[in-house]
Length: 432
Image 1 (tube, rainbow, N blue to C red):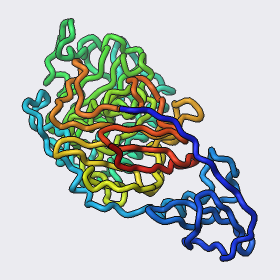
Image 2: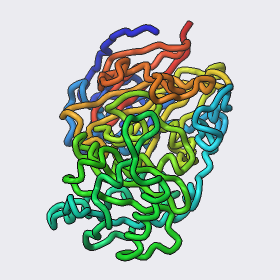
Image 3: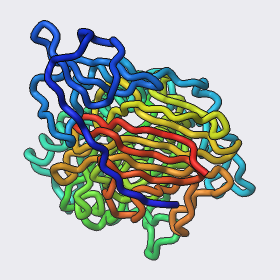
C-alpha cells in the first residue's frame, strides 16, 4: 500500500462567465464560483461531469471546507453501478470458532426471540444486593442512560429493528450477596458459586416482580457500582437471554447502553469483534468512544439500504467522485463505498466525524477510513485475527484518518479526499 499526499488548487473568479450558473447546470472547471441573481454557485465534479451547485452562505471559501451546500452535493451523488447484493461476499472460512450462528457476511440469522426485522422487547431491571445497595441517583442516571440503546438500534438498523424497553422504576433486592452472582467467563480464573442457569433464573425472576416479562427477548440486569465482587457482566443466551453489567462496566467507564447493545448484537446473529480498533465501533469494543456499527456489519444484518451503498467490482472500476456522510452522524445519504475485489475480498470506504455517536472523540476528529475484508480469515478475539482490517487508520488505537488532499492506494484502487467540511468528497479510481 502507498500513502501519498497531494493538495489541489482552487480558483475563484468574479461573475463574468458567458453563461449563467444554475443549480445542476454544467460548468467548465472545478472550483469556479459565480453569482446568478444574488445566489452564489460553485463548480464541483459529480460523477464524470462538472456541475454548478448552490454555495452555502455560511461556509468559507478556503480549501478546507466544501464550497457548496452538502445537501445538494449528496443529492447529486452517482447511483451505485451494481446492486448492493453484488458486494455481499461468500463466507470462505474453513473453520468457524464462533459456530455457524455467528455470521461474518450476509445473512446473519437472529437467535432466540431476537429478530433482524421487527420489534425486540427487553425487560430492564435494576438489581442490588444485601452487601451492595443501589442509590436513588444511580437509578435515575442508569434509567436515562439505558434508553439510548433504543435510539441506537433505530438509527443503525435503519428502522428495521425497534427496541421496546420495559424499564423498572426501582431497585429490586437479590436474595444473596453479590459474590454469589460472580460469573466465571470462559478462560478466566476463579470460582463461580452459582451455575449460569441459577444466575439467569434469579435475574429473570427479579425482573418479573417489577416489569412485564411476557414475550421478551432478554433481561438486562443493571447492577450498582458498589457490587465490585461481580467483576464482569453476565451473558447467558437462551430464551429469554440474560445480560448484566459488572464491575468492569464502571471501571472501564463504559456507558451502560453500549454494554447491552454490544451483547445483543451477537444475538442478532453476527460474530463482530472486527476490525480491531478500540476507537471505532462498539461491536469491536464495548466501550469504544466511536459507538457506531460499521457498514460491513450493518450489511451482514441486512440493515443497509441500496441508497446507502456505492457498490462496484474492481474489474469495472472507472474514475468516480462522490460525497459520503459520516457513519457517526444521523444523516441521510451515501454511507459506504464498497469495491469488490473477489468473491471473498473487498475494500470498504467510510467517512468519520466527531458527532452524535462519537461524542467522546477529540474535537476536530474527521476523515476517511479504508477497511479490507477477507472472508477467508476467521475473527478470533484473543488471537488478533479478524475478517476485517483497517488499512486506514493503520494502528489499532488510532483515529488517523485519510485527510483532505491525501491519497491512499490498496489492491490497485486509489482513494483521494478532494473536499472536506461537514462531509468528505472522495474520488476512487483504478491504478496499476
